[in-house]
Each structure stands twice: as structure tokens, then as C-alpha cells.
Length: 332
Image 1 (cartoon, rainbow, N blue to C red):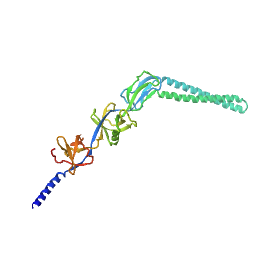
Image 2 (image 1 turned 30 degrees about the vertical axis):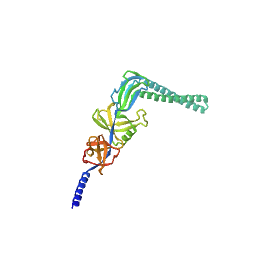
Image 3 (image 1 turned 180 degrees about the vertical axis):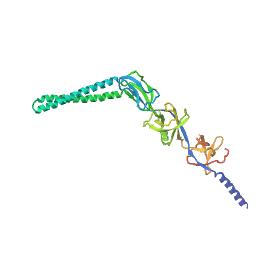
Image 4 (image 1 turned 60 degrees about the vertical axis):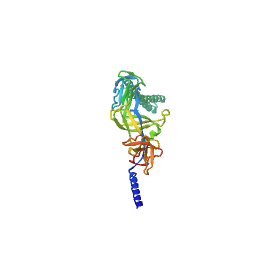
């Protein structure tokens, strides 16, 4: 009889043990550490506008901070002298055309006289030579006119529409020469954030489906995308230069606004994130309990980034291992 009572008690104790360790389990996930890097916004492109002509400035259409208008003109230079050159060229062309008409008519007349043997061949040869020279002069004057008109076109200092003036070096009335810098303008339609990343950080960035940067000065977050990746490697920083592009911005787009990027990098091997309720903690030690009841000592590294989560490390733990939630807390 006592044997039956013993086995009954044993079964009850085993049932209690099984209930104690049949609680909900979880799967350990690889721990992440967020690497923070900071850059500052700048225009997508910056160019310097220079003069290609020697002339006096008549008017400037955009000041610092202004956008280039639809016509794409930043300033205009005085075209007085180029207009006079074009007028002189047109007069020469008209006079030359008169000469071409005369030599052509005379050559035709002498050709008829020669056929009737009333004139010498040498006179016709001279007329045809003069006619050919006049035609060559006409072609040269037409090319000269094209060159002069191109020079006149460049008396209007053009710039890309919508770009903004960063610096301005010219005022109306100033005399400018060929090669003089007139302004520096930038494309602020898209802002770039230059960063320097290690190869592993770059790989993590490229794998991200959605890149978000924080603008702490504005209290906003915006989406970004990779614009440029340098094929070279900076031996001084031991990093690769990368530009992020921001198209939508909460305020007027401008340079110098701080942008923070947080990259979720994998921790070293053996570092995982676990619910805090899965930890059995004492004064100096902590451990996790596997499904089979095995206790695995761990080192607590800090918060796991979520409510009720901790980052822990152990050489005996890998991402994907299963542990018990809410194990019984035993004293150390």
C-alpha cells in the first residue's frame, strides 16, 4: 500500500515540476547596437558662374538666397560694342553681295562675248576669279556674323532655373573681364548629407529597406536614399564616403542642418536580446533557463531597445536558441 502512496506522491511532484517548466518559451534574437553618425545638409551641386566676355554689367537679376528665374538669366552685360560689330558685319555682307552680283553679271556677259569671239578669255578668267573671291568673302562674313551673335548671346549670364545664389561677386555698373567669377550657385532642390562609413556599416546601410535620418534641430525625421558611394577608400579615416539624398524637407531646403543616422549593427557573437522576465537574477549573476531546464549564465549588457528587453551575452548562447519565460526565481 505504501508503494502506491509513494508513486502517487512522486507523480504529483513530477507534475508540479513539469508545470513549473512548461511555461511559455521565446526565441533569442541577435542583439543590435545602434551606431550614430552625423552629417550636415548641403546642396546637391554647386557651380561658379564666370563671364565669357569683356563688358560692363547692366543688371543683376538675383541676389544671395534668390532663385534663378524661369528665363535662367542671372545678369546682363552691356552689348553696345557687340551690336556695333554685328551692324558693321551686316554692312560688309551687303556690300560684298553687291560685288558678287556685279562679278556674276559681268562674267556671264563676257562668256557670251567669248562665244562670239568678241572678247579675250583672260578677261573672263579675271572676272571669275574675282567672283570666287567675293563668294569666299561672303561665306567668311556669314561665319563672322554667327560668331558675333554667339558673343552677344553670352552677354546674358545664364544659370540653371530654380538654383539659388549662394555668393554674389558683381554689382551693376562694374566692368567684368573674361574669366571673372560672378556668382556661386547651388542646387537645393535635393539636399545631400555626406557621411563616412566603414565597409560593414555600408553593407548594413545598403540592406536597409527604408533609410530615415533624424533632424534634431527641427525635431523631425525624414526619409533619405543613397545618392553616391565613393569607389575609393579613405586610408586616414579608414572609411568610405557616402552621400544620402533628401528630397522632402519639413522647412525651406538649406545647407548646414544637422542630420543623424542610426545604423542597427549586429553585436558580437553570443549577444542576444531577451525579455527581462526570462532572466533569473541575483546580486552578481544572472542566467537563462532552457526548455530542458539547463541554466545558462549570462552577462547583462544593458537595455535591448524595447520595453522589458535586455541585451545579454554568453559564449553558450546563439540567436535562435529557445528559453523559458518567467522561470522560477531561485536565490543565489
